[in-house]
Length: 498
Ligand SMILES: Cc1cc2nc3c(=O)[nH]c(=O)nc-3n(C[C@H](O)[C@H](O)[C@H](O)COP(=O)(O)OP(=O)(O)OC[C@H]3O[C@@H](n4cnc5c(N)ncnc54)[C@H](O)[C@@H]3O)c2cc1C
Image (cartoon, rainbow, N blue to C red; front, side, top):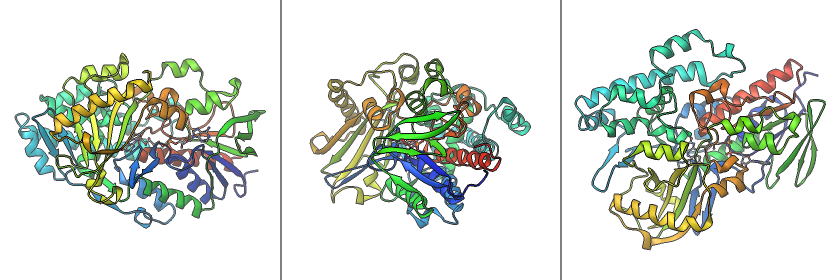
């Protein structure tokens, strides 16, 4: 029966991937229900409101707008029909120490001038770097991100390989950046992005230097009202197509018979399913929801994988305005080798980590009460650490001290709202593997074909999408992952494979 109309699809998870999938599948004519364990949408991009403050608990960088445009265009819509965006200038501030900070601007000539102060011909070198980075981005968008990988044959794209080799996309990112720059500052500014897709410069391929083009050329944008407005926009899109969304509904088992998922069991009852698309953490979806014989990947497989970092996150409501912060701010610690080693190789709570501090109320005063400021502090930490309640307050104190020192601005006495979360939050709230914030790291051998697939090997009507799958971590690419999984579902139904 290769009919789509009326087929019951259950999507597990109402994060960006689950909501985008629901919209796309409902548009095709499927009868779609999203089952979400939490009482609100967004997944990692959940919103938390307290005492007049609106916190985005996850993403804060709105980049790669074409992925969002592309999604909405499939419904004859534009993102502006659902939420308003602004382009940030400056993009962000970087603190290197107590005495050194600089701003990356939305004007490349200013950035070239800045890089000239780092090293001889720094601006010219940045221009060359960004030109290559743009070429890599174009290859990625045209040849790599929007297609799926099922076998080695799919990797054998002549242009991808020839152009890729010319651009050294398979070289390690840290070695690649060293080819261009001698100064530590320049190297850090063009590489830091990979940490936020759950990777490190010494382990990720140079293709991720395309993120420097995304940052400096395509710009850093912000959705007014916060990321929750994008979540609400995509949820509305899904509901307009007829998708139903059930909150506080946790899936505890997928019942399989004869290689077919028949039933989905939840805390709210059991549902007969024709097709299931799981967008929660892949490890949870396989190891906890399926009987052993129906899992495509073993525990041994997961143990060998490089899991992306967890995060030590602090949400603060401050009863005063701040002067020394922009919307986005970084502290780049001096010894990156040590920090990345503590993150990926030898798990340890970092004593001097890089720190990301966002104060979105700088661009959007609606997020905090009048005269007040909202801040989130993020430290990426290894997923293999013990997140003890007793450790959180002392670690927070250490990080806060550092932030106050480097920015030269004290605000500890102005804190009126505070919440600290780490691994346990990701475990309990999202069923995350090892409390990872970002899913599966991006190494060369965890890219494309080498990420867990969009379809189960053992269950004919069970599909997966989200940040563990191709293309990977980050809101825009999880939306692309939804598109790829949905295309596969439609294709399989049309070929009568489901
Ligand atoms: C702190 C932080 C900052 C980030 N910053 C950025 C950024 O600035 N820009 C950017 O682009 N990306 C950023 N990211 C990454 C981005 O948020 C994620 O890649 C993306 O949101 C993942 O979406 P997803 O739908 O794949 O997964 P999720 O958001 O994890 O959604 C999966 C959903 O499945 C639900 N679920 C799990 N198990 C079950 C079950 N058994 N039954 C029912 N429901 C279940 C979960 O509750 C969850 O809602 C950040 C992530 C974090 C954590």
